[in-house]
Each structure stands twice: as structure tokens, then as C-alpha cells.
Amino acid sequence: MVFVASAKKDVIFAAVSAMYTDVALHPEREYHFPTGSAACAFVGYPEDRLRRLPASAVESFAGVGYPFAANVISPGDTVLDVGSGSGTDLLLAAQEIGENGQAIGLDMTAAMLAKLEKNVAAAGVVNVRLLDGNAETIPLPDGAVDVVTSNGVLNLVPDKRAAFREIHRVLRPGGRVQIADIALGQPISTECASNPKLWAECIVGATLEDEYVALLDEAGFTHIEVLGHLDYFSASASAATRSIARSFCARSLVLRAAKPPSPPLGPPRPWPSTPAAATTSPIDQDGQAAPAADAVFDGRGQTCGTLEPAMKTHMRALESGQVLEVRVDDPAARLGVPAWSRLTGHALLAAIEDEGRTRFFLRKR
Image (cartoon, rainbow, N blue to C red; front, side, top):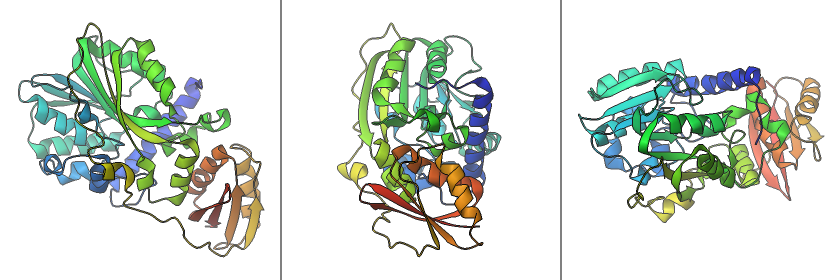
């Protein structure tokens, strides 16, 4: 696990908030992670349930799985959605609990909260309230809710130990948790994980799956059960993101757990719901032709943190519109190239796998 100091934490939260502000305000744009109704279908949401929601709630969806496969919500429950975004999961929870329950949406991004407020009104639900805050300090009293749901959010939280403690704290005894999130099969280097600007990439903040489960156990949860996995990043429009995800064996999972004392949980719903959902990507741009490069930087052997200054030096030598080919073989360094291109405004034209390395093609702005 990587400790993140509080000053850096603020930068991480700001970077994440900036990314999801963009998703809220510009859902029509293409991002390096799947969004909208196509993402909902890919991760396993039943189409008939989505049709009952306002289109503006679904268009900014950025979840990574289908947490409702946990099957832990009952009519009359109070449900907290941590990182509620534009409201897809919150509104689905409001439907499941009925008029006698309450759904609480928690988000730290002002643009998402504003959009969510409009979506709640459009959906005509009256059993919803919204909170401004983040998972590390949930603004609710102890034992306030029956269920906590979260989708693609906790991997973005710097102090996951604090977040799981908070989730445990706000649950009533016997309360349940349903989570969809990103987990890794290979660890992220300290250099990459300590760079706040890379956290919005969805992979940098993620932990190994065993560590994720161990954190839940440490927080006091029982009946921890991983229900399934999905090759989530295979649906990314970005070849670079797909390459990076493969490097770290990054995938989404759905899990559930309970706060003692709790009887064993009932049967879950199958997830992924069909084999095709786990293996079929709506976007496949691998095998693309390499663009013509005006210069080549051989970054093999470079690591995340040392690669970026070298790319900056090589890019300065180019004219606007010219292309730099960057060759890297370190898994963590592969993460830094597309993030750096986005942050500096240079266009990432292609990312091509080639004999154990990745060749990135960046066009100077």
C-alpha cells in the first residue's frame, strides 16, 4: 500500500474531480474509459432497468461493473451510494427500496451533484437526498444506513483504509455492502502511485485484489465474496489504456460483504450476466498501422517519473504537428505516456504493442 500525504491528497481529489466534471458536462466526448449507455450495457446492466431512468442520468455513467448483482438491497432500506455521479445507481437503488426507503447520494464533484439533482427531479422520485463529500469522511452519523453501494469510485480514493472504515461506521449492524471496482493483478510502482495527476487514470489508484479484500476484512466486514470479474478496459476507445490495463492485469470486479452481526447473505445474481459481456469489446483498434514519426525516443529501461522529463525534452525539439515515437517497456512507464500527453495537450495518435514493448505516437500540439 502507498501512503499519500494530505497535501497530495488534495491534488488527487482535484484531478479526479476535474475528470468527472468533464464527464458530467460533456458526455458526448470520448474518454479513455467507457461511459454512457454503451458502458452500462458492457458491464451488465439490464436494458429494461435503464429504460426507466432519465437519459441524462445514463449518459454520464462511468461505472465499472454491475454492483446490483450482489442482491443485498431490500424494500424499505436506507441506501448510501458513495460516488453517485449522475445518478444511474442511485436512482436504481431508489426504485428497489420503494417509497418507504431512502436513497442517499454522496459525491464530491459539483458538476455531477448539479446534474444528479436535475436527474432526481426528472425521475420524479421523492425518497432521495444528496450530500457533498468524499468516501474518506462520509457526512453521516454512525449506523445511519442499511446498504452502501459504490461503482468505480474507491479505486480513486487515496486512503482506502479510511474509506472502508467510514463505510463500516455508517452501516447499521447487519448492514451490507455492494461494490464494483477496479483491482490489479500486478502492483503499481511507488513512483507512479505517488503522482497525483495519474490517479484519474482509474488504474493508478487501484490495489491488488487480495489487498482490496484484506482491507475490507481489516475494517471489520464478514461474508466477503467476490462475485465475478470483467475485462473492463477492453472496452476502452484508447489503445494505450488497453495496453496499460493488460500490463497490470487490471480488471473490474463485483463483491459484497456485511457488517456483523449478519447471517449469511442470500444468493447473488449472476455476473457477468453472459459470457459475451466478459469477453467481447465494443471497440477493437488493435492492429492499427504505425503513423509516420518525425523523431524517435527510445525510452526502454525508463520508469514512471523519469520518462516524462525526457519526453518533454524530445518534444521541445519538434515543430507543431510533428510526431514523436516513444518506445517503452516498463509497465508503469506505459501508464505515464498517455497521461502525460493528455496533461500537456499533445495528441496520442496510436499505441502499438511490439515484441514486449509499446510504441506511442504523440503529435505535438
